[in-house]
Length: 85
Image (cartoon, rainbow, N blue to C red; front, side, top):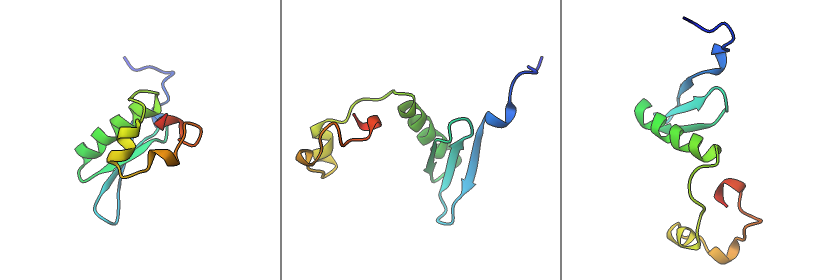
């Protein structure tokens, strides 16, 4: 039985085929998007982005910044976007 209160236009994912061959997956409800080489990869990346958007994941450490060739001394918690804190 279908729900009469459900707003279907906000449910689901839109796929956008980019000029460079990548596929962007965008969650209709939140507007969060990510991309991949295939729809499956784009969905996996979108799932991770949605988890981070919802407050999941681990905080970024100085070791992470070092690994990404970023100087930890150039950042403090006030400068990082909230999802990186």
